[in-house]
Image 1 (tube, rainbow, N blue to C red):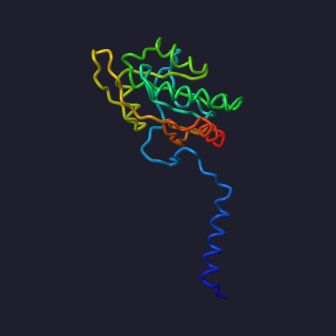
Image 2: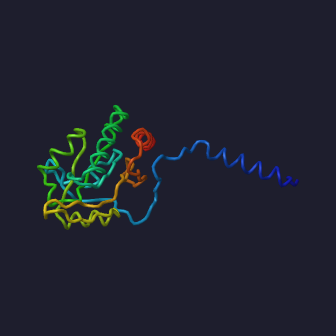
Image 3: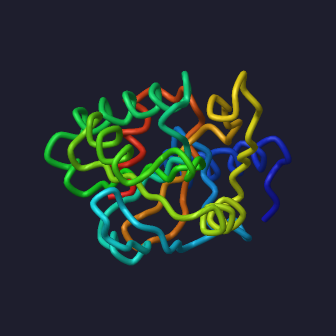
Length: 193
């Protein structure tokens, strides 16, 4: 039996859309299976506890690289993540937001312990020495470059803006662009949970 060409394309289109109906895309960029990204780190959190990615297994992890003296992107992102946690409600307990500093010279344990939890009590700030910072930024493909200021201690750091999102099994799944609406990030996290 032959099917007329017009009906063939109609049938193909119906099958295509029927197959996609259940698969709603993420709001962030789906980078599931992307090669070459880091999967682990060895840093210290703002309470002085050594941390690796395995410590957060069972939770969705939102990984953000920034620094405490950042004038715009970092505080805006942290406020947005606070809104995400509010939107998630009880499900927020299944999410861990990690702020990894790209400025280890100024972002000490004391500085991070004041800054990061001021946005949300569950957020953790992570730091290492310059070598550890260079390793983790290279492994996770994060751009970070110091720019001179008016004095040696007033420099800024240009860095990748956006969050890497890992599922509860520790697999990299999404990149949420800077400025993504909290409602859309919350919806993505719910899908991953």
